[in-house]
Length: 310
Image (cartoon, rainbow, N blue to C red):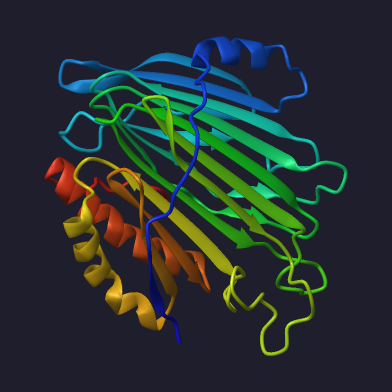
């Protein structure tokens, strides 16, 4: 039976320097070992948000903006033209939202990571959010197959008046011998700076259990997967995300305690980190959908538009 756990505030340390997104994108263009690059800049134009700059190379692409509701938010599907990442593949993404822009970004499908013994598959993402801008990154799962090694580094620099909603889901893939936990390692680092000050440093490492499990093939114990196979993380930062909102969210998630394990943590700034351990991707998505709907109601006064994926 699953459980819910409320987690206290956590402290973080010193500020860093945010590089210019487009200068860095140009520097990456000289790195011919990169399998894919994508850089998007969104600006407010009248009532709508438009993609003012789009740069793509290799297997990473983005759809033209779609407008799924009358709120003017631009919805783009992130597309990986390859079958999945293999040893040594590197992918770079840069996102910039100028003042007042609203964007919803979501992968077209799951990200697959295959055997990577020579070198890990690496995804780096740099995000800049100006005042009154809003970015909703709605994840599809990263599926790590037998022998996979995956590194994900996300750096966000945001204005205190901006809104960020960021999700990640990591799941195991199929192995020829039927082992349910065959990938080598997943590492995900998320760094958020607000007006140049570090407000969040989050580093997650998932790997095989240190010793054979007894009752379950999944790692048990503190700091491990506690018998579950799938991991999800949602980060939300916005001025409306205060203690009253977090209490309301906690109550809304209570019915899911019988099926998943949920943790909710306050941040140094208005916002929260939501963690989910579950037996499947749909179980994590169900929890995230509840949280996302409440965030949209509090911040935008309307529900999120359906993403219309096939």
